[in-house]
Length: 131
Image (cartoon, rainbow, N blue to C red; front, side, top):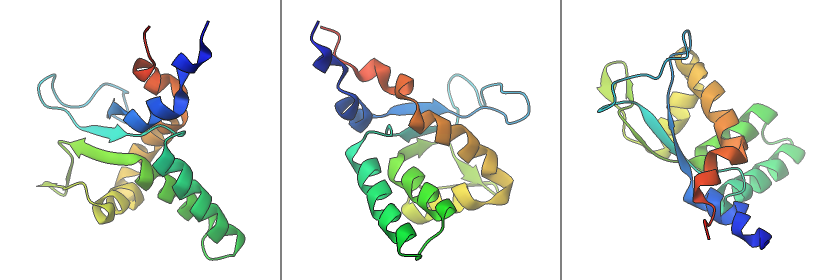
């Protein structure tokens, strides 16, 4: 069996979408036609690995703390999103708005969902070669 068909880096670079769930009930949010989703790269993606490497250097130099390291990794993993609003207004997916969403104490539950999603290779398994 050719194990290169399970190229985790290539699959992670393609990414996958996470449909957000209610933090209290775990029920998917929105409707089947319109729901909040965040499109994320996997942990093995080039951009994610580079962000982790750079932030790790800054952590060792005492320039940032571990929380900032994790935040930078999640920012690098976030490619786009759909149907995301804050305070009743649509939120464009920019680096500043990603940071805003992920650091707002009212939405820390979003980070609790995306962190494990990015770290699990199972979420990018659909991107493995099928041949």
